[in-house]
Length: 94
Image (tube, rainbow, N blue to C red; front, top):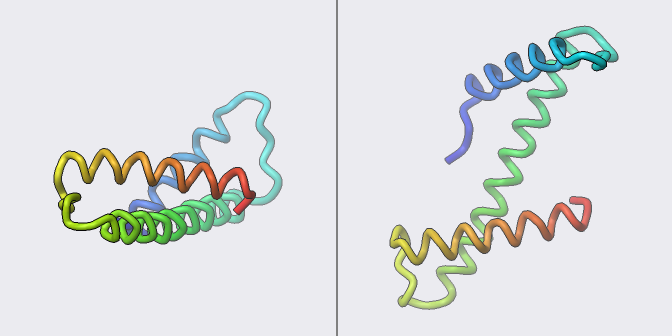
């Protein structure tokens, strides 16, 4: 389920507040610029996660009717495959 823009904005504000409260962290740019970059990163990550999730679900659906979407086995396999796919993308620098 994609994150709403309102939730992403809220998260970016919270993350900025945490960064500002962290000792030894110096922000390069105004609060609005840094918060905007955080927001863009959250939205980009969410979009990438949607893409990877769709690929994983398509792969699982191709395994045949023995895996029923929404079942416990589906959820477990989906989680495993999603983790594997994300780790692969991270290791490739995507």
